[in-house]
Image 1 (cartoon, rainbow, N blue to C red):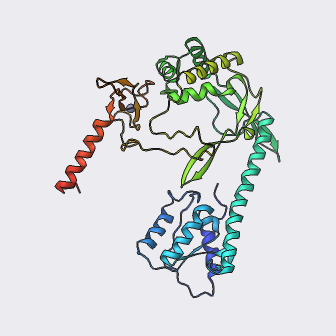
Image 2 (image 1 turned 45 degrees about the vertical axis):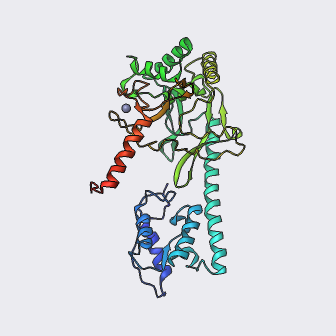
Image 3 (image 1 turned 90 degrees about the vertical axis):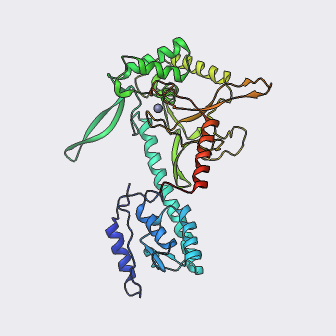
Length: 389
Ligand SMILES: [Zn+2]
């Protein structure tokens, strides 16, 4: 949701506030229609920082309409300080009549700006959330894509003499509801794990082609969703921006809203619970089974808000499947005892979609071998000095 003040209006505002000051505009940067929440993805903003830090332009001031337009409060403060101390560039805002943030009055004002920017965002978010909680308790769909197997039914009302959308109901989708029933029946009958179930669905002729390929995490998501016995579990996670990256994180249990009998069920509660019991049993049989490279925070009291990555393997995230273009993941095979008597396990890169039938590339690439190859190629290039451009 963009600020209703368009970039043109913002520029007018800045120029009005500039009137009578002995300043010259060196360059104008704008990012039309782009949210200020992230720094990356804002070419104008990035260009401005590059111009200043690389010395391409000589400027003393950056003028913005309001502090919110410059970026998110947390990052802004640091960027603003770095610009002032390292490059002698001050960020001034038109709505504070360009008061200098380095004076004591300016410091106070900028502290107020930060607090105001943060709290107005929080108030907005809170109001939206309260509205949505009301919506879900009335058994109206809160927005977003309906879960697989369901579709939305619009209920209209007449306002000011014309029809408008009142709310949406979640109703079974006649084209896809059977997929959910197939999945739960198979999971109940076989107690298979999610990769095997995903593969089975991908090979099943009654599953519409546009839903394929289904991945194992997608299957896990379907099996764990209580909506299929009719109960809405809503607001279990939220998005946030940390380190200039959009992240999803879980909400606390008391923030999660549950609405029983929200919609028509696709499976019985008994069946859903049987499948959950199978899933729980599998988890207990394979404790601590995690993808290679994830840091385990289970024993920490204070959990970080984003999952960090331990780069155990230097090529993590850089090995791409040649058939489907997905990033290959490092997986270790079960440990075995070598002839020397020590316990060993091999780590191999594999295409994550191969196990679920979403990609035909079944190549397993030995991590140690690939690392050696890459490092020796780099070493050769460095020593020979003939770089391909
Ligand atoms: Zn692949």
